[in-house]
Every structure is written in C-alpha cells, then in structure tokens.
Length: 261
Image (cartoon, rainbow, N blue to C red; front, side, top):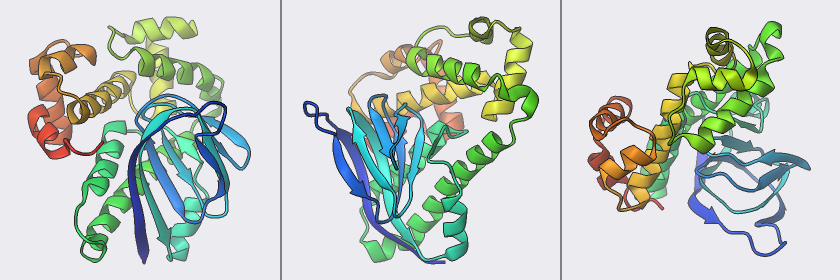
C-alpha cells in the first residue's frame, strides 16, 4: 500500500457575493472532509450536496466540484497507489453521516495538527487515514443494509437528525423526535438505530461532543458555559462524557487542540 499525503487543511470558507466559494475544478486526488458547520452546498459532478455539521464528504479523482456558501471543515487530501483500496473508495457515496462524528473529526484534527515533516509523519498519517476510511466505510455499510421495511422512514429519520444538529443545546428526547414522524417512541428508536447504526441518544450525544470539541479548541468559553451551550445537564456530566469518549478531560483536549483553527 502506498498513500501520498500532500495537503492537510483546516479552513473556514467565506462566500463572496454570488461567486462560488470555491471555483469549479477537476479533483486530482482523493479529498475527504469533515464538515464543522452547516452552510452552503457542495456540487460534485453537477449534483448538489447540502453541507451539514457532522457530515463527511469524499471527492474522488476526476470528479468536478465546487462549493457555494460559507462553511468550515477539516480536510485531508491524498493520493492512493493501492488499486484494491482505490476500488473500495470509488464505490463509496460522496457524503454521509459517520456513526461516530466526534471520532471522525478528532482523527482529521490529529492529522492536521501534525507538525512533523512529510517523510517522518507518513506512517502515522497512513494509520490515521485508514481509521478515517474505516469510519466512512462502516457508515456506508449501515446505509446499504437498511431493510425495505424501514426504507420508507429514512427521510423522516434524516429530518430528526437535522433537528438534532440545529437544536442540540435544547432538551431533546426520543419521544419528541418520534412525534415529528407520527410514530411511537419505541418504533422510532428501532428505526433510527437501523438506519443510522446507533441509538438516537448516542447520536445526539456525539453531535454535542463534536460541537463541544469545536468550542474547546476555538473559544475561551469555560467548561461550564460549553456544557450548558451543548445541552449537557451539568459540567460534571460533560467532563465524564468527554473523558469516556476521547480519553482526556475537556481542558486536556483544549490544550492539545488549541491552535487547530
């Protein structure tokens, strides 16, 4: 296997008038992005993909893409000379929601934050990239395995996912989300897990953790303020969740990731 890394980016793209944020271009390598914020639309081979926080995007060599709107993302650009891996990546969808958004974002941030020269960091980045691709492929597999009896509920589930992404700081329950689809709470939880791969409570928690990590890395807000803004009941529970999912305390995460964006 040979993976060549040549571009790691952590950017905020700003819209300028009616001009596309990024010009129409032909993709020359694989480009994988984790969307940090909502906003704008990516176009790949003429097809529109709305940008949503927590979502991942994979553009492949030879595709034509551009983006309208303002958004921020963490991205890794790379070339792959392994034919088997390339064939697998070429079969993946352009966008999807990872099963563990917080982990996917963390992996790309670790790659971006590397300050070693290219030669010495190549092996480390290869391992990180393979884990990122595993996250992407796992999520893609879940999507493909959605059974016919649940497929009719996919659009409704995606709407509740969007609701979580926009209102993660509020008190959200499965009962509330189920009412939006006019189905029972138990059935909603079963359908959600079948389609998204994890229970709604875990998915919501991952959204909150992802946003909390962004605030820790890019603001001076206190742990208490971030806990409240991201919908955690209290600071102590917030610290517990971060420690359990990331293996570090919120302040340790802030210290390590402070200069990423």
